[in-house]
Image (cartoon, rainbow, N blue to C red; front, side, top):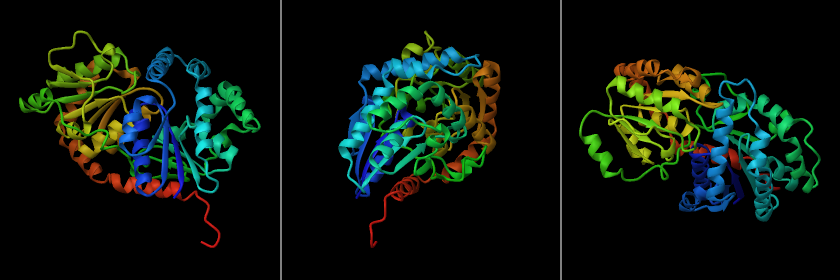
Length: 404
């Protein structure tokens, strides 16, 4: 049995899969702790793993809003985001310290593994050096690997002083070669299948591409009566699935709702952030703060979303076509991969034209090949096999006992 400490940051797509990974590791007999945002405490505890909150709910909301503002300020700009300011405003250097402390309290020599989210999981790399434990980085999308040179540059120029201060407290020297250090985990895992990787620029050969990992338990439940009645009243609606963070703004909703209007479809709109939605909503739109996607997505005619890895995986296993209005850094890459696979159409944020979005949605709804290919690829997704492969990859970094 190993002691495994998981750390992750972000929104549902970044956290729910880590919780599912923790559940699978615990089922294999490991002692598992996950350190992440306070909001996910109930989900982690329901999975039977120890939970450590890295923030409060108020701090998490502020962190999401600050990330949204930082990205909004960058729209149309060639400049990189103010990552240093984001870290300082949200005490993320202090969070790295707290994550390393979580590892320190649970460290058992020769039996401990630290697992961090790719790019943001700097504490895993620091703890690996400080305590001599193996580190695993888990990427949610191929773009996290493809953008690593840019990320290494930004970290070297913007974050080095703060990271090196944390390292100094542990008796570690400053990072010298940032690209090498950020590629230095003992194991690199990618939470996507090989056929998804092959649909775009391939990731490095050392990435263990295990498949999509969804959290069925966290996305299951009984749909509300209002939705049940809506589904029974006519043809299948289109789901507009907003981010669980606060990363989307008015042009996304304008394009998505106009596309549904052109297609003549009713809309199920899911967003936990009503303050970001159009007011008033059109009469054909029914809003819910959240829904059990495992039960709901298979009953949709199509899904419009921003390109999050959790949503696209759920669409695939449900056999539902997707219109990706891609936003942020990695989502244009995932949208392009889905389009090459023939399961989706996509638009970058610079082309969120309502008329064009409507044309693409009508194509998705009227051309049977999109649903057929979605079902074919969805049938190839084996969540149990993915969890087992990810666990085996993590377990492989433990030292082999002498005489074994």
